[in-house]
Length: 270
Image 1 (spheres, one colour):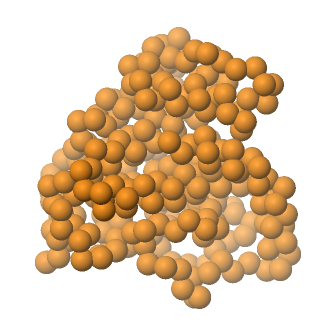
Image 2 (image 1 turned 30 degrees about the horizontal axis):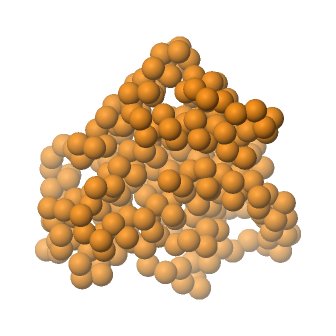
């Protein structure tokens, strides 16, 4: 049995536990899931996680969200500008980032950074495309942020299992499905987002225009030029295949929105 397979089996047999430094962010994320949480209470909860509080204010003041040019200087104002759904996505991003944030090995730290670059680009693309195809942008961004959750969780385990990816092992579809399912459940990710991520784990034709969140996430994952370092390179048989009219439409969307995409990617990256 490979090291990867043995770790996957361990995860399936026991509770998913987050590293200490990610646990506070995780608890904040769960608190924000209350649909009736007042704005003032949400701001109070966010302040308990300083990194998240800083990110919320920074993103609210970014080019992507500060259309008026008037900055906000407090968490409550930032949450009001971004909306709670978007802030939940940022809270989850903090969990993802912190899961791999204290890794001692330079090689695995580099792996985590590359995976995060891929993740934020997919999340930004998903947010952008969802707005164009009349799907839910905040939900799409959230799905983009958590779509590599299995990879981040496994990387967070490398301090105790330092041979996990040492032989160049890639994350198999089976391992991604099994680990991802367990961690998504622990994070209390909504069913519609889990279903969208599961669409990445199966093969099949890509529908265009995207009809649902799963189609959209697959499209964003195919379009990003920043590939996941845990996945095999895209082969010719896996390339995005749409008709010429659809390709033209997609190209126009991406060209017109390039500045917005760059701003959102920069806002999510930290």
